[in-house]
Length: 434
Ligand code: IMP
Image (tube, rainbow, N blue to C red):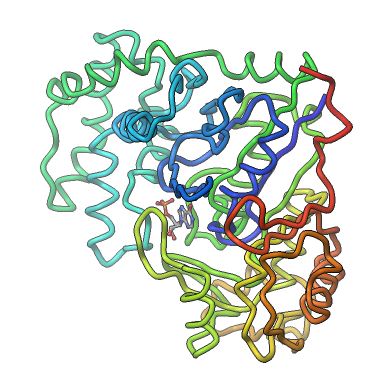
């Protein structure tokens, strides 16, 4: 039995697409468990570059069963658009391999409308404007629409009417126009025909796969510091991005999960507003943005860039129970004469090695304490074992590993699948043959 969770250890955009895709070579089932089309996982296959938002990264592997779990919020139009785009690119048989939880919540046009109106107000958080927050608000308010409601048009319409009644004062206060329920239901007809055949009790499907000895990968979205409970609240997304969220978002018991892999870049980035204590506003920050192509894969926004934050990484290791780290984008540091790493914080109550999650709510209350490491100029892309890295790059990996107090399982030295140093694969040698 082998069930692995892959989770972002920073503010999202850690390069999960590539890492999940590498591990899915060994997985029979890949499941997304939280978030929605706010995610943008970039997959690079040969010369083809693909960004998937809703579909699990395993979608490019013809043998892999892909599941959209019940912790997700799914925009039907985005889902259909994404499937059609992959078909257009020559990927076949997708719908037969896809299962959509009938308990997942739908993102409908009024969620996108509210998100967009709020983002043009003074209360803007810098969201992706994909309707994520309002859809999860509906879930908590118990006025959400389940994917399974697509099976019954009368029920769907009644629920949409109730949701619109609840949203109407908010939409009007934001200067918007309340959509018409009947029109929304009609507009969903085409998507309904495509999505209903893919609906499934995915909790049962995934649990059975695990019990049958299949290799199951639970694919996180966003990152630990964007998690609704453990992130830099209120500058967070609206779902449980952490590893614990996988149990709830898939509908399996925590005891089923065997390994947690955390993904971290060799530096840090963030999009949207909110605390980012190691943020750079200088030439080094520009280097990270330009060389690392740090522009949002969903929104195209330039990402904020900064040095690696070890207290944050230890925090992520704790709240996720990370067994091993996948370190991405080490090659982006090539060419920097020296590299800084935050190892502690100066806070009003003294120096601490802990991530000051509470103090971060007060602007400028904490100051990162840095250590400086030598940089390197050699290209890393051809390295396939740690010993092929320049001495300074190897020292950086060891420094990170010791500072994070978690072993490194994988180092990514370029965007391609092959540009990877694999140190430990949690699937190999553990799973029964499918
Ligand atoms: P929302 O998830 O669209 O509501 O956005 C809330 C916050 O999470 C904003 O700061 C977004 O920029 C951020 N966010 C959401 N999804 C991602 C992601 O996949 N990568 C990085 N940041 C994200």
